[in-house]
Image (cartoon, rainbow, N blue to C red; front, side, top):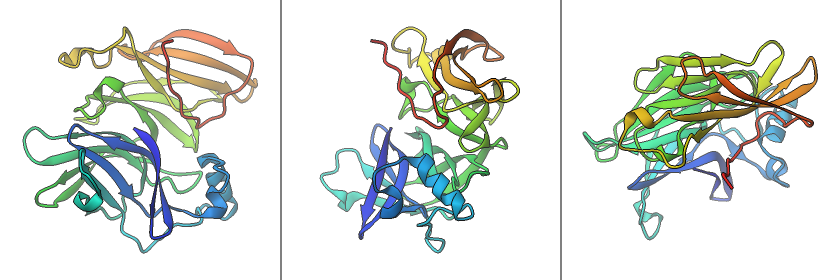
Length: 272
């Protein structure tokens, strides 16, 4: 999953994560248009949100009359002539968690959080199903929680996923907890609050021992969830590691760090 800008007819549309499955590549065309005086210099999404807040909470470039769309392109297409667009009214997503093909029919399943339009936001965790042959599209809200910055076991990208780990959003981009959600039922499997005046950013799932056994469903959550947490009252920061499989996302490691890592920064774990 990659960050991307779609450029069409002289306009750029922001999609934080570009996602693929075994058969297809997915992209979006949302109401969230990036204009040069915001994106020039690539200050990052935090800068866009800050400038948006100065204008009353709405980022410049929102096209309110536009209907958002999801585009699906065969993985080995030679050009975009095979790209199919599916209209999804109100679905303005930035962070896509995962996508996969359904084994039962011609559906494409997309797990996403959407509507990132101001500092005090409600980010809805949803599942979108698209029937590529009929064009039928359905949406389902998975959790009533205000959740953002989702992470999964990276071995399951493009495959059906049982669990996702998301930040509990207080004020963008500050997260007061990390929550483990069962994606099929929406059940909250586990949660870990960081404590009073403590906020984290984007959680990151890391496999426990190398590659996961994708043929064993019990192995999917065998790993750790990592995050940077900042205590705003004490002005102290730490790096924490949670046991992703434990019933309460038990803290296994806490490392105090000398410098604060800003909220909302995307991360990548490298074993070497």
